[in-house]
Image (cartoon, rainbow, N blue to C red; front, side, top):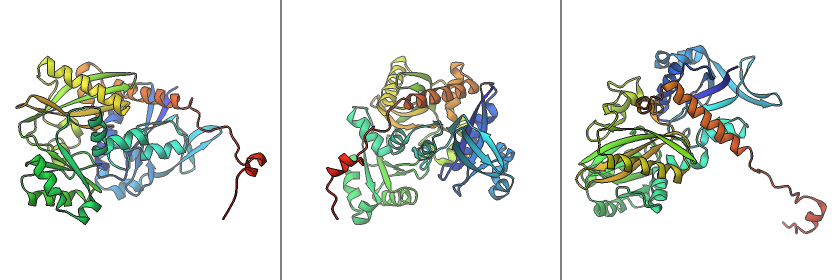
Length: 381
């Protein structure tokens, strides 16, 4: 009998559409018999939906029409197990698998929701998710662990509103050009390269349309971008091949998802897989990736992005993606791990990770409201 997995995607995120692409890629490529994947769509209205129409990407071009063909979902936990209620029908679920991207989704928020409902949830929890999602916090933790990164500074919108001139002194320390990013978004949303103070101000103010915090980094013009995926948990990580992304400058949202790569997600980009690099650099990327994943306690399938300064021959960590676009399957294909087997391993690792948590003590066997304890507590207004 197949194990039933509710595959949740969409969400209230600027990366909503990317999640749809990733989830439907996974759904249509999965051919194994171990799991039954049930697509559950989280709309931008914060409502869960289920229905056959969700399985075809062409239906997402007009959401109101799509949602009319679907049923709203309620998640229920009772003595008999976990269910989703679809109309008058109850469908048993063995676990939830989060295939979502971006803030409010990939940062542990959705995981917490299902955790409170006592569902087995395959995804990053609120600690791992929020740290990795916040690029500034992630950089600070890795900096303390001596991971090489480009020079950077960050600014919160409240600090900026109080004194916007503070960014100029910071920018002068690093020097132009600079690259400005939202701290908690992915898929290159809101990213700008700046060559002067005026452009810097415009870029930061654009970021504040999407996020409360801006990350400003040194921009390395003579850089190559290398990405690698890891699969596993803190006790063991296996690595994919390394790719070199060949698109010049940097990848905008349009580069990734709205040009020739449309409907292919990250799998549709210009890339060299595997990257043609020296063994020394390859070894450094693999070992640094595993060190970072261990520090951040990453699990499941993650992708780590690096910049290599070809002039100085220095490798810099750029960012980590807890739920990579297209689940980074294009990096695993070259290791003879097909998409279906990759999905099996992700779910296996996630269920194992969650079962370990069930062995933890979550309550302390003390009753401070007993009579003896209450007599010792001084109650006052």
